[in-house]
Image (cartoon, rainbow over all chains, first blue to last red; front, side, top):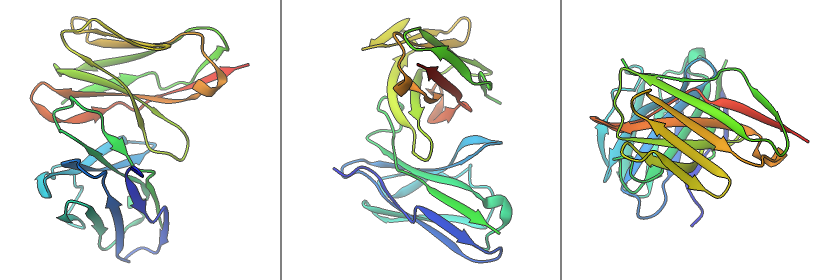
Length: 115
Length: 112
């Protein structure tokens, strides 16, 4: 398996623009997580899905952020409109179970810069 | 709210020595604790998981301890090598929380 795949790897956009980040989890994994990593706040969970259904979105910072998982092999994280404070590395991860019994497999991340 | 503390300063050690990283937590009773390694420009990679009823876990040159009384986990790398240089993250889960909460990480630099 190729592991978790994320695209794009780098994204530079201007404030106010819409940004869409994409993720393909490992086949057979039922859970998908979106994280954001910054120097100030570390690695923060934004939202996670179980069998394509959003379970906990309490980490989504505000209404400008939305995430979807239309099928088991694809998820998107959208920011509209983007702001400079959204600049961070966004990771997607997948796992067999959310109960921490199994490790999470992280993608390479998308480095987002909003100017 | 839960708080996880890892040494914010980088740990510099000489090759061949044992590196010891600390993860302390408060306001939380996790059922599991995991350690991840993160290299620059890459996502975290899982290393070890230890449960609350386990005192110690080993994997090759790695050893993790979990003291629920002290609310602390220690992560040891024996016979360290320059290739072990990376940031190491601890993550807590379970105990009523169906998600992992990550520490900020400690950067380890192993010098030849």
